[in-house]
Length: 288
Image 1 (spheres, rainbow, N blue to C red):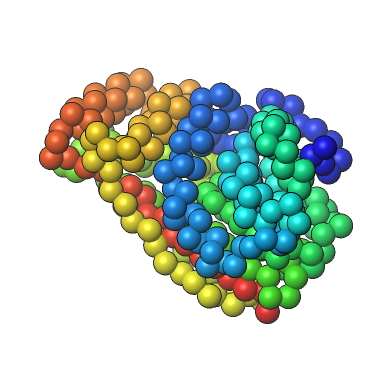
Image 2 (image 1 turned 180 degrees about the vertical axis):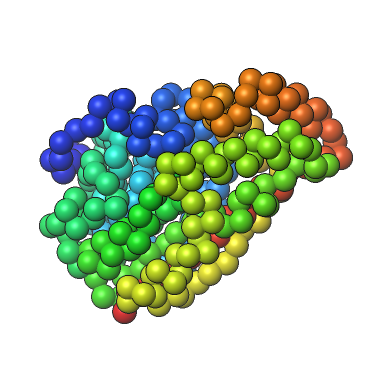
């Protein structure tokens, strides 16, 4: 039976509050598409971090577990995947998938990644590799995560991170469109309002060095999407789920949303157009 660390459960309402993009069915579907579209870059990063059979790997902010399931295949039945998230509903989805695939080495932890010293008190110096994708950009205290990782990783253990820098300036529709740009600014503002930071990768290398890590790899994956391409559906799925939330929370008006969707619809049929996606920065650090 797939194990679960015993931690007080949160309500679905808390799930929605804790994660700015929500934890509903629409977001689960979007995360699944996103994982597939970025899986090649992700697996390459895991190889750089040395993920291999028999290891203990920590998946920070695992969501419904798309990456955790892939990691479970890589570490195999002699390894462990410890998946931590604040959303009980996401962890339930991971549990169901792990049971269906008989991945008994996937362990779920309900807790805050900013408090690893408490949530993973029994794992001090046990973890070989920790992984976080688009997690730090949503956190109010990313340095607390790094402090916790310094405690749970074994000497020589690695952390692999994929996250944003220069999101607000880089995410651009071509040809440029004011209605599109306004929504991008609103997206970044909504994350900052909850303590997040779309430029967080600019700060993470220094934070890791401060806490006894050595930077082994730092690079960027910059992609564009053209109408009709598979990758076009990545931003499209985000707009469908998140732009209405910007209206609900007062970051844009109904008129702004309508203008945005009209611009996106025109762009979706423009064979000469494209969207410059936000650059995804990659970081691998080693605990000294």
